[in-house]
Amino acid sequence: MIKILLVDDHAVVRSGLKMLLNTNPEMEVIGEASEGNEGIKKALKLKPNVVVMDLSMPHGKDGLSATKELKKLLPEINILILTMHDDEEYLFRAIEGGASGCILKSAPHSELMSAIDSVAKGNAYLHPAAQKRLMEEYLAGAKHDSNDMYHLLSDREQEVLTLVAKGYSNKEIAEQLVISVKTVETHKGKVMEKLQFKTRPELVEYAVKKGLLGYRI
Image (cartoon, rainbow, N blue to C red; front, top):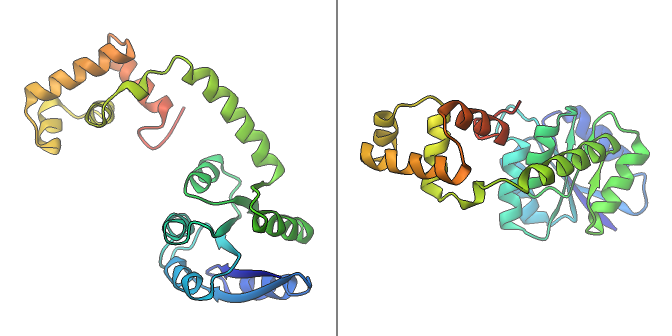
């Protein structure tokens, strides 16, 4: 029997999912929550096999934050993200946060049950479109990362790179990081040397492509 916890801010959605999943003799919805914090408390108490987690919950803790926290508290738990947004940024962030899979709210009922069964067995599940994009992203990343020297940067150098790309002056960076302007200049020089850049525009373009500013081109 797969014990399931539903976390969604819409009561109607939870009710519909509960009725659907309980028709499967191998599944049982043992609890419900309307936002992330409540979901974490219920999961700690009920110990479900699978948490079906809505990604977007405007009131309380959102699904992504709840997933990250829950995986730290219960590493063995399986979390299936349920979302209406077919967006690769959210997909990758959910997987990085510890989710075992992701499925669209528009998916057929049979696909939802298959997804729950899959993650309950310790497997990963992604809807078909997401699988394709994940593979494309992996291949593009592998090609890019073969010459990427970002891993050579220290934590402080990574911070300086991000702030430089955001347009902060050396003085502003020094104030934010509580270091001297001279130290900022030294870090910036090392970043330029390690990444083999000669101009600031090159640095900014790299940071954007790397996703360090919160978006990519």
